[in-house]
Length: 111
Image 1 (cartoon, rainbow, N blue to C red):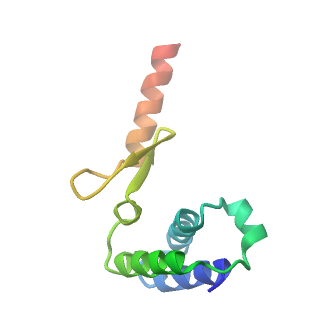
Image 2 (image 1 turned 45 degrees about the horizontal axis):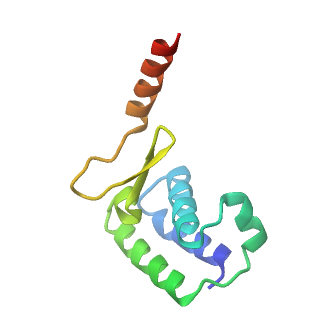
């Protein structure tokens, strides 16, 4: 399966569970995690074939996502305040609202 085909497949499968914007974002995160390529780099590599290991990860991730497992738990990571953290079911997934609060607090301290 090509990188672009994998992206389209996961986005279509997730469309039943999430709105278009969210399924698109999740698809980007999964493909970036599997390939190691940013969105812009994937434009150049969209016809590259996934390796056997990448296809296996893709299938596993998609199955977990279709069971409503949060993307952060599926990938085992979450970004917060520009830092990547390991996450699993033992921790709460960092929320964007909390990140905004931290950033605002830090900005008020610096001033």
